[in-house]
Image (cartoon, rainbow, N blue to C red; front, side, top):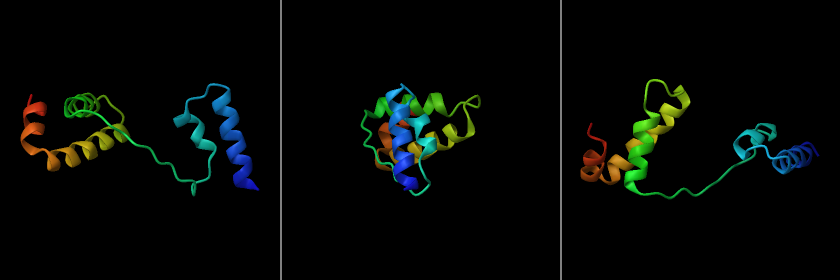
Length: 85
């Protein structure tokens, strides 16, 4: 019952134009979210360069660092070429 009400509220927020990442705050902690993300190495490098800046929020920097570690391990030579300052 509580989960159904939370899902109804979530869908209502989406219908009112609230961004999904903001509307999810009403969902219970046990609700899983899954998404697929695709992009080029150059796009990932750009994200990491922008989001690793000291002015970015801590959570965003942590996310950027995680992306960087994964991509660096998969494509070390290309990643070094794209992220060298």
